[in-house]
Image 1 (tube, chains in turn orange, blue):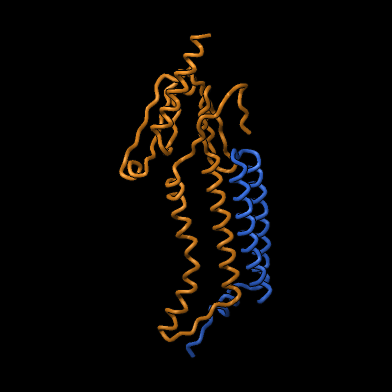
Image 2: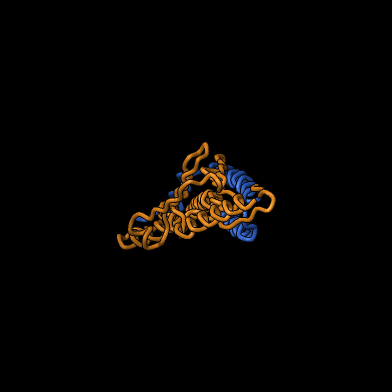
Length: 173
Length: 76
């Protein structure tokens, strides 16, 4: 669980664009449609003069297949959902969920930020307004990359603004 | 005679005992994955409202498919 510092405020919590999730799901959607063959095949067989009817074993296999697809969908969704970047007024936290048993959390303090770059590359990213935000830092992990995030320009602005107000606070203190 | 039912074909291919074993294996796997997902959602999720809805949808869907498996097995 993420714990915030004293007086720390979350400005943005972002995850990858929904289209990236849909792309990941594409193969699974195709797999989910496979049992429809059971309904198409009897009609095709009837056309050829062969009688085919669905029995209990076919229902069992279909239910098992859908259970597998259902569980896989939620595992992929969980990976997508828990893969988050959190921008607070003091730091940027990168929570990377690479599977159910592989999770890494790294953070960089905003006062170490040297440069923030936004990159929107390609037809679909331009159309759907998603792209990468790269944060160059002076820390151990030099580059923080937020991949395929929606509205990358507003995220960049939020980081730059937070960085600026943090510096103003530090200079004023 | 050109008569073949997929039901009969599958019944010959898959014996009821094998199907019951498959049911036990898939249900056990479903329970294990559910526990792991539940743990992740409870521990790491930031927006509890979304997770609450997702949990219900997941559980209802999963139970429907398990119930369908059972119905199919009981009508063998």
